[in-house]
Length: 484
Length: 95
Image (cartoon, rainbow over all chains, first blue to last red; front, side):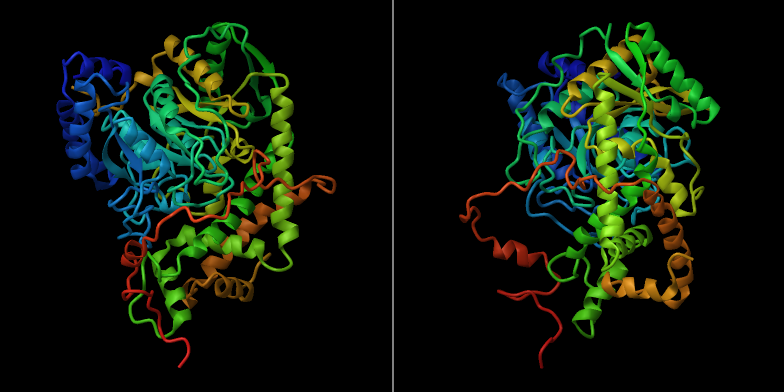
């Protein structure tokens, strides 16, 4: 069996060429064959899947349902799933079972999607390599000695290896776009507030946003349209109408103004720069108009982010007290000992580092100098984007300054943080952005980042889809993982 | 060094984390490198810039102060390592 995309699978299900059970069994066999070796899953959800298969088949048989009904997926393990473990890649939540579904999970369940498993991830979504998971590092299907990127590395690997057609992820500073790029698939983070954060374990609340991985922009658009909703249970949910992101996919991009940032292109290694430039040239040849833009404050984005995100992290993760849920240490001698030992045992090295950086930035005497200052830089970066979007419709930029790197290649935290240099600016501004595959460098995938103005997901998806009508990069599959 | 051992110990106390003697120097070095990177934010004058807390500049949405959920005490208590029928259990605080 070979599937070109969700629409084709949906047609086969509706035409009865395929049952939901057969579809499930096909992907389940791939999971059995590859998942352990790739270490991309934390928990399989077979019981839930069986229930959802029956429900989906009933919907299809009665002529109801929609193109997502019966389509299998995995959820990043920071989305709460009722009665199923949600570990967030942490020892702290190793045995945590949520009493409810996250809103995005609920929305996709309502559509009739079938949950096969929970995907591995960097602990509490903190990392750019998936090496920070308590459950071990995930391998990149393109080269098993290399990282898949992070923090949604398990989700990206699952899609890239063809174990599922769709995976959910979350992106705080690049955690969807960077693994999508390093694994050669498509991944989108919508505008901050588009997706509900209810039931998504919090890392940095003013930045966290759920999104989707799939092979193509068309598949991402289908899933995202169903996933996004206004949610009264999330106090920062954007009060906007539900949107069908597929609507504009087939529009020509002739005349669309695409901003390019020469300053960023100039900092790329030559082989990645060449590949990125070629993809931008393709957009130009398709009729887009290229406009050079500047983001004068964006070079401070990583510095500002590593104040804001750890500050919010230290505040959010203070809820892990070892008492109400999560890990509790053995034989605490007093209350403070219970707090300190439960947290010290439960959190990994990177999470502790960020809690400490955040605690420091928020401590007496530093708040104005660091947290407020970083929030002011954030404003300047957001204004840079606003000026850029007065001239252009979409920005095309690199995703990562490098292809997938080897395990343990980045021992010092700052070099890891710099991996997100091109993804963090748009995160701080809350903008919709995505990564699309643009070919291989040294046999490893490279991505192109498309950034849209606020709530302009449809625009970047349109450009991405049109690019994917012209190119075949999104169909490339690592050796040994092609569907037979 | 921008951050020293004593400060790291103090931060650990505030963050309710334990830093062992074996790891303190490594942690000081790594936090120092992070602070060095963070300090670049001082390169730009931001005197007249309004801080941005939310990317959409949205303010906290409020709701009417009415009960919207039924009690699910049993479910919540079942998630704790130590609880009895009505309470979370912790080590004795007051003798």
